[in-house]
Amino acid sequence: MSPHPGATDLWDRIDEAAFAIIYGAVMVLSILMAIGAHPDAPLKTAVVLFGSVLAIVMAKAFAEFLAHALKTRERLTGAAYRRAWAHSRASLVAANLPALGFAAAHFGWMTGDFASIFAQVYCIGLLLFLGARVGWVIDRTPLAALLGAGFAGGVGLLLALVKYLIH
Image 1 (cartoon, rainbow, N blue to C red):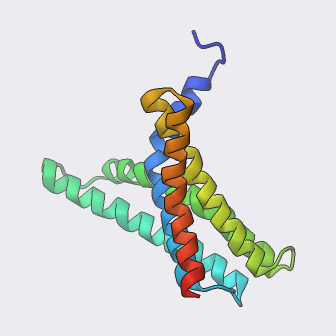
Image 2: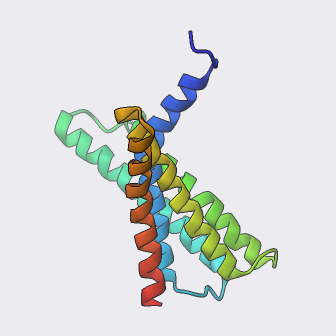
Image 3: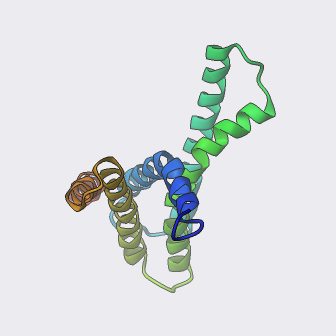
């Protein structure tokens, strides 16, 4: 029995959601790159950011749903779509807090520039965490966890850097 009841379940849930969260973090960083350096309308930015991630996640689930039907020759059912959606919906974890940050900027609780920086740091943090998790799960060493974090976080940092170079 685990010394921490429920700990394995939590790690299993994180591992199951890793693909979608990584996908979502890269989407958010990419959308922020397209939005520009200084978002003038933070509420519009929040809606565009969350709406774009939601639309892409729905498109991924829909494509997965149809492709699965072609591959397996199974009928298109609500249960099959729910399975595809369950695999993709965790991507929204990467968009929720950034969108809330831009909404907060709309109400004057922070600046749009701070919301943008917060969103990038948040997504890079998700990538760092999940990269470390990959390194740890594969080799169970601190060095592997650091290398995994460095690789995944580096991808996020590169996207954030490109945003600042092009704007």
